[in-house]
Length: 241
Ligand code: SAM
Image (cartoon, rainbow, N blue to C red; front, side, top):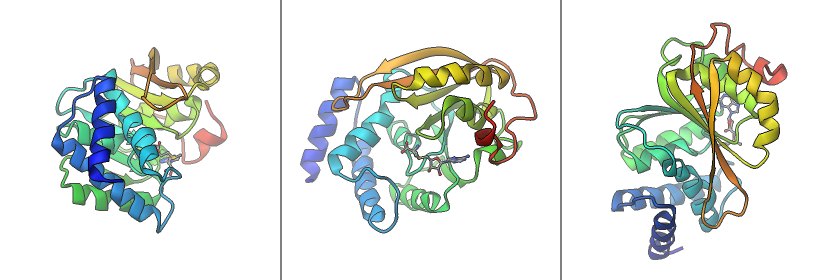
């Protein structure tokens, strides 16, 4: 794909979504797409490979967050199970004044992100190798974030244990979910409550060019998470709350 075509697609869709853009964002996403494709040929980073798919399913799907939320500059955001940086690193490109922590349990994805962050010349963003269950018990990360975002990591009853311990009271978890979220909610509501969260709102959002429904589930942190959560690595998945 030529750079010009890339810009046209992004500009048109961002306008349709009511989102702003500037040269820095387009330059950043262009570099991101090319580096992702280059590295993806060497090892598996993402199953989504084509340019138009990367734009729609990774970039625009990540940016849809900003159609509903406007974090204050300086807000601390954690992306749990970020993979190749979605949605957290794309959000950082859109709003560079956010403090973003990208976490994944797969070292090669973190290596990729560190190289990419360096190439993009971004500050106040860190890619950290670790498991949610371990980091959530560390003082440095626990109850510290204004937002936690997560896409395609686990069903709600497990995901809430992976993420809610990181939020300060009053903070928000925003989960990127497909139409199956309703079934997940039935199982997940109890877990959310145990962990100090409360389901606040479900936004149905539209990404131009994506047929499948996208939902942003917002959970508000209303109380501190009890000290015993998250449980040891592997337990949340084996014995969901
Ligand atoms: N969020 C990215 C996206 O939407 O493209 C990646 C989704 S990928 C299907 C799930 C990611 O979650 C993987 O990269 C995996 O390593 C990570 N993951 C799964 N369980 C985790 C855990 N307990 N702690 C940290 N990362 C985890």
